[in-house]
Image 1 (cartoon, rainbow, N blue to C red):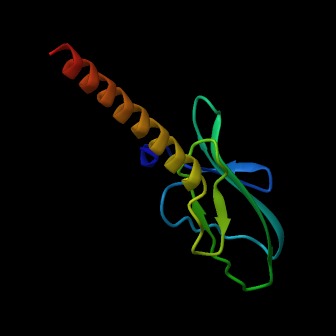
Image 2 (cartoon, rainbow, N blue to C red; image 1 turned 60 degrees about the horizontal axis):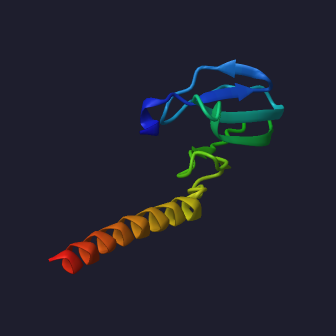
Length: 116
């Protein structure tokens, strides 16, 4: 679902166009602050992640952004491979939700058996 949302890249405080996949951004040597997030409604930003990089002359630095599994978690930004943040929250939500559905089905079954 998040593939339909275009990531936003903010480099040294300046927004720039971003896309899923490789984004090549030529930069001069020095310190640079990179921020990436996905724009959304609630929350306004999904998976914000920040990184400060130091570039030497002629240096190329490759980083990977990974959006979180759970919308309220932070994203991951840094050298590949990056982790899937929010997995624990999503698994817990699925277990609790699935357990609730099973409990409801069990109660319906018990009620049907006791009436018949």
